[in-house]
Image (cartoon, rainbow over all chains, first blue to last red; front, side, top):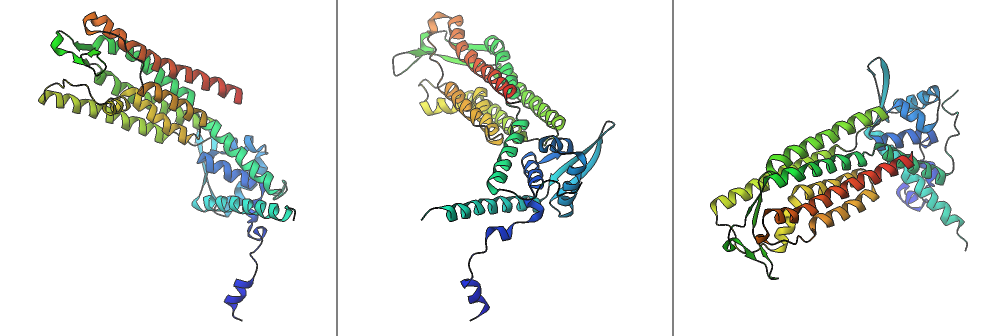
Length: 116
Length: 240
């Protein structure tokens, strides 16, 4: 039997195996969602909406930035420092894939739970 | 504190529900619906005296009248001030809405969503001005039509008129804001604009009766926009 035939015989991988830890984390998924909707979002808005401390949020943003999913731009408005976060193309794709996997996972669970 | 202070993952249903709730919250925070409607209502109300002052009716003799299929008679009416007032007023209005949107979004810490709406509104204003100038150029080189225009021509005329372009641009805003109540409101507004209230007047009744025939529709357009602005402002206050 060839490797190709083995692949065809193998069952579909469970959606859980495709989940990306960077994106699947609840706060980071929230950051990506807000940034996707807002197109560009200020650090303070994220902190308020996600109810996080500045330090905690900074670390989550840093994880996403390192993964290339968001871009961080720091600047000043008057004397006040402002940090703006923008979603990258990779971030947009990662978010769409994560939501797709979550839907698949829910569908799989509902199918398994169904009686009969 | 680590990046894993909040438990990773979780129930997928809850995660999806959180995603949807956050997306909805951001859209609400980005909306500027009531301000746009208020600005457009003001522009519509200011137009009333200007349109009235610049109204010109060729109803001097019975020969100028057009007999409608239903037996009613009408005459040619020109709103000479339309091109002077509406294009600059609408462009200023859309400019003001854009400035408000950018400033508000920046203050709230969000990106701007409504710029395509502003550009659509401005483009439709240019279409209105071009149609108006084209029609005037046509009349300059052709005899004035003596037959009533077909219904579809009148419908198209109302659609590219300022009140119609305001409605079409609002459809774009409803799409951008994913705002179902605004979509319903705009469809209602467009019905009112495209199927105007019947103006009962006779050319022989003079200028005031002609003016009286136009006023109710313009006032209605303005009142609908103003009512929409108040309604969306109250709804927004309740959502906070």
